[in-house]
Image (spheres, rainbow over the protein chains, first blue to last red):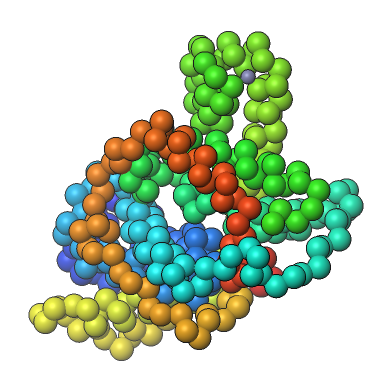
Length: 183
Length: 156
Ligand SMILES: [Zn+2]
């Protein structure tokens, strides 16, 4: 993001298209990554990211600057994701007993696991967290938001965010250390 | 201070309250767990899916911005549109297709989306809620979600 947020916001308020383009370039990837983790679907993630940008542009006059534009964008994206999840859940929720049987993956020898495999395994485990814990973890460790910014993003008290973070790390550790598929 | 409180301070970063530090000094179990949690944290930081050059997102956003504008806004030039469809980083390969029956997401009301005020929930409420959440942890997420995160690095 440009150093001078105020100047950038002024440009956005006047409908300057290059400012819109800069905003999308600056935050689009991060937003899609976050939304992908929340919704589990790349196409949905991009649709929701578009929607988030559109809302920022159309409501820019109401943006009062208490939070950074980045936090504001993540807040809108998070709300869109929650909405999407709650409407999707009504249609797609699958109870554990109804899942098809799948062979358990062979446990890989620990030393042979590459960084990329390890990252994949961690992301696979991440999806088992409750959505709030998942959101906090992604915003903190992937997007490098402060706890204060995450609290603004998720409309939670900062202490609550820290508690979610702690439980998320503890749950992830337990699931990663479980001898079999975390499911 | 309880074990969990001390650990919560421990993973939150920043200077530790004296009480939390005292607990961690005196409680080897918590000291060991804190180390393990910090290790998970470092691994998480390295697990972010990479974003890749692809896409048309700036152009798509601009096209929607233009469509949504009230009359009186300047119309874009063809050149501006062409520029917008430029190089850019977006999501990786687009793993998995959207289920055919996926409906458009219902949109939150603008006032809810734009409400930037802080939350009022308390940590005590939250901890209560976790007993419920813990019970649900064994619940597998929808297949689409699992597939998504597995596939994210295939393209990059
Ligand atoms: Zn302890």
